[in-house]
Amino acid sequence: MLTFHALGMAFLVGVHFAVALRIFGVAKQMPLSPLQNFIPLMWLSFFLALFSGLMLLLAYPAKGLTNPFFYTKLIIIALVLVLGIKLLRLASDSEPEFTGTQKLMAVASVLLWVSVITLGRFLAYTYSVLMTFEVFY
Amino acid sequence: MEDALLNFSQQMGIYSIMNTRWGWPIIESLHFFGLCLLIGTVGLFDLRMLGFVRSIPLAAMHKLVPVGVFGYLLNVITGTMFFTSVPDQYLYNPAFQTKMLFMLGAGINVMFFYSLCYREVKGTAAGQQLGSRTRVLAGISLLCWMGVITAGRLITFYRPPTYIWCFWCS
Image (tube, rainbow over all chains, first blue to last red; front, side, top):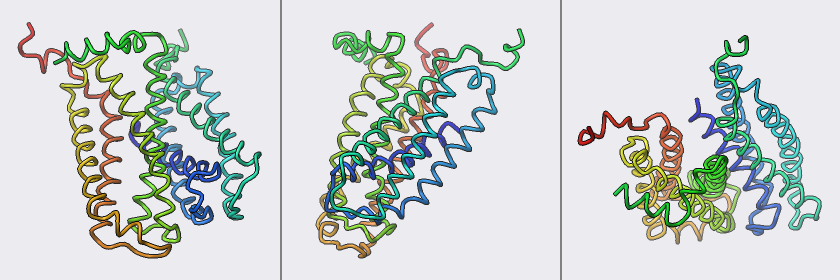
């Protein structure tokens, strides 16, 4: 499950990074609108990460649910999904040059993904409760 | 071997970074960031060569590859930081050994790609399908990198307990 979570994240964040890089101005000759065809891959990766994440939560429910980092991670994921969908909408316009705000959104989304990765990694080091029965003692 | 690696880690100050409270997890996060950069650029390039989203012109898409190389170098550096700080946990770890084999496979594949297929790829317009040789190499690349991620994630679960591998320790 951890492997699926890692692979799902790699492809989801990877495609997002590619779109963000393009909006930021890397590989300008590459048209942006075809990248929209990778959206199904992003959703597939997202659901793979979501499913494996739920399974991991099910294995040690108290471990995540008692950790404030876990809720922070969920909130940031929600934010970055909204931002990601907005960025992909831009892709349909396929403008050669993007405005400062749009570039800022691209940078912000990359930083948000980096914080999701960091928080996710930190979950393995910051838990105070591992087994559920510990909550009741 | 372990001593030399550990000595390197200590001499370079890596060892002390990795043994602080947040050193290890922060470097792990950077390692994952580099991996996403690699998959997002080289991985997508492989998918395009395999025949997905053919409307993307390959020559233009190749401009993303330097970003992937940056991610790769980031991961070589951060990976070396893990490896040299606890070398005995990696050298005798079957998951780590598998990961290195996949890395080697990806490395050899890259050399073949640039010597055999790159010219064809550069001349490929949007919408065009590539020859089967190039598609095979693209598939090998994608599989190798997914293997690297899989084996890498499994390293934690195959940590060698001393009493199994170290028959000369008593």
